[in-house]
Image 1 (tube, one colour):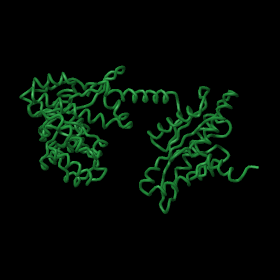
Image 2 (cartoon, one colour; image 1 turned 120 degrees about the vertical axis):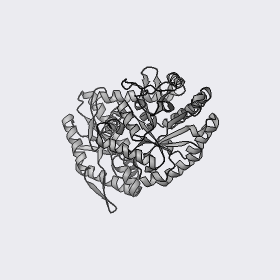
Image 3 (cartoon, rainbow, N blue to C red; image 1 turned 90 degrees about the vertical axis):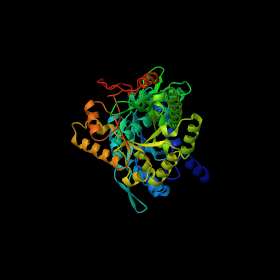
Image 4 (cartoon, rainbow, N blue to C red; image 1 turned 135 degrees about the horizontal axis):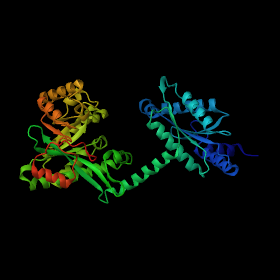
Length: 454
């Protein structure tokens, strides 16, 4: 007879200690048996559901990990009580659960089960005196002959789950081949991006910033591009999300900043008319949150020898979401280095005027969403007029981005805006073309449509 201690050890090895549900190891063994049966019988009417809670991190962050554990236990009990006899329910790890329906499970039954699970988790749970809502995102994979291992099934179920989470959440998505192709393409993009810097594939493009009164080039905004060996020139939307998710973005940011400083100093020295040429570089939220930001920037300024007063850092209002005091401290540290600070996309962020007033900004950039239709949209025109008056009262420079027509430029001049950038003057230009523009000194107004490299 089996000893009780041995039985307990075997149970603990195959079950989650917190929830009492079968664990990942047990689930994968059962899934392996289901796959073997399907391959032997040729009957692929099975399914796997992969569930991830939508609001779990918020519960942990706001109420603590003990409350998060309580929520997991309640959700596990809800699933077990309502789905026993219908499917195997396992805690896969963290706030992830997996389901393997018993018996034949064609598409219709799989979708009904997904809907039932979402309904079970749509309500609130009482956690230590608090009513909390979680909800879940579900990925569903239907059996196919090409599946040979649990890893393949769970990989695709996970992919479908993230597609659901990226949508409306509290929803389910059926996996299809297009998702697999997209996942493989993203993996290749990530792999290629890891080599882009060392292969010298990243490029800096330059959007001229001009004086609205005379068209003279006063500076430029630096923008990253990727000259992919197979796909050609890629815009930031094509690769920055991948860079951010994989932790490569901050390294790319510093590479761009150093290159910009070197180019800026070279142009200032070579062209006396542009001895005070200014460069604007974007600082994203992740880079801004780096506790070594100020010291790192100090090192770049010393290494390149550029005059700090000709370098502007463009920072969005979202930095205040981490706390106005902490953000203000970082901003003052940057300001002490002598650089200029510009609020990018002003009017679209989250900061209070109080937080803004306590920060040492030098300029505002009016977001292109207000400029685009300001001639015909009186509400956006009123917003631009208000921002222009605010900048004047605060003694801040004002830059309009996304200027595409002479009518927009004229209206901006009338409202007191003195600096602008956009397709009316030039798209984002590679280095050689921007140098030629600097040699001329002026950005000629253009009637051409927006370029693919903006």
